[in-house]
Length: 81
Image (cartoon, rainbow, N blue to C red; front, side, top):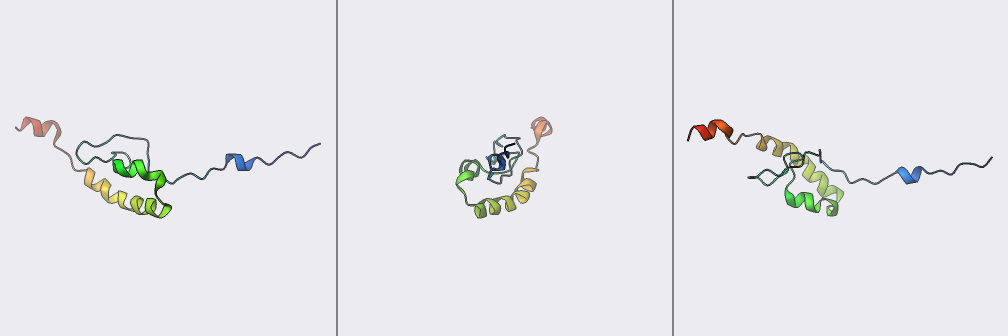
């Protein structure tokens, strides 16, 4: 019986670490993604950034998350005009 070929290398991928959570929508005022909190520029350049640059940005994202939690007013703000 022939020895099977080792095909493990086919399934291994060097994925780029990303904060994407697949909730892609750009906030109209801040121009950042409401899912991952990256700017449009960061999203566009992500694959060209070094791993260190990506890690630096990812470390900033929790703070950005807090900034985007401020409500814009919604219905209550429109009714008060």
